[in-house]
Length: 157
Image (cartoon, rainbow, N blue to C red):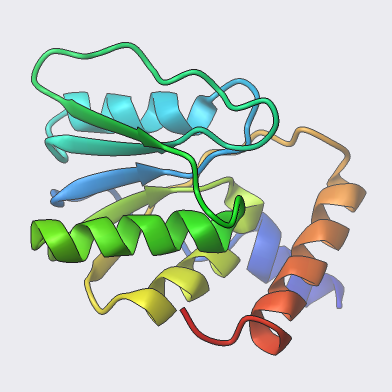
């Protein structure tokens, strides 16, 4: 169990940033580290568009405009990772995007990648941030429960 926890949540597979059509910053981090990283990656030339999930309760503010970057802020429905992925992949289909870079929390990366791949066949790059808002034990318990839910309850997009 410890080895699986380490591989799935502490050191999940990640990717080096590459040029994509859009960058998705998953919500839920109070300091908006994911949004800041996504905008920084766009500013470095990895994509012209950044999707920012405004997260939970209360919603985070939409980041300030950045010259040359289209920032799209949204509230997912349902208000969870699955809802964020559904919104992003639906918008990607309408915009005819073929690639996306996702910025999740490191311990969320495995589950977010799984959910994204269920909803889209586009090329996905995952470049997470690391910032635990609670204790590591609580984070790991949450991720195991959420991953189980993704495999048992919500088995499709």
